[in-house]
Image 1 (cartoon, rainbow, N blue to C red):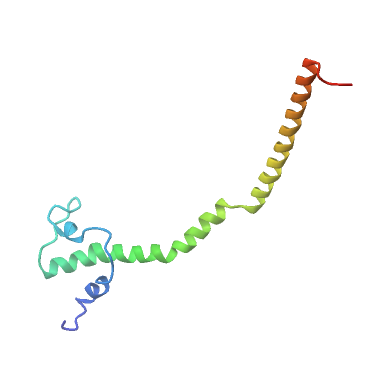
Image 2 (image 1 turned 135 degrees about the horizontal axis):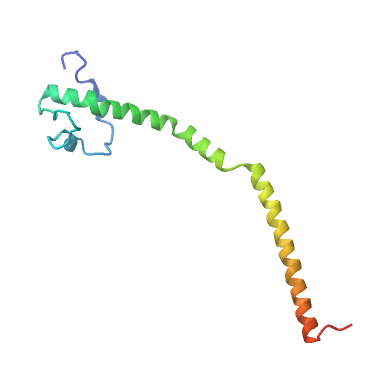
Length: 118
């Protein structure tokens, strides 16, 4: 805690619930092609936090900050009131047409059986 700022990311991250296992990422088995594994010392931890955790954390903060905007855009594009109104009118039109067809079929059936009076 010498005031050099090297401990600042750890203080910020201590309140965050990690989604992934950070210890598993530091292990020698986790590395990208051509990348050296993180070393189990102070410098290795700093490099890992600055190179892996901190960019992920900043990106996640941006995602969370923009979540309401993304949700609003997605719902706004999927729910067009004018299209729904046209669909509603078309549904009513088809319902009425079906009613007329069914009543016509019932009349034709009654005529076939000779039960229509008149």
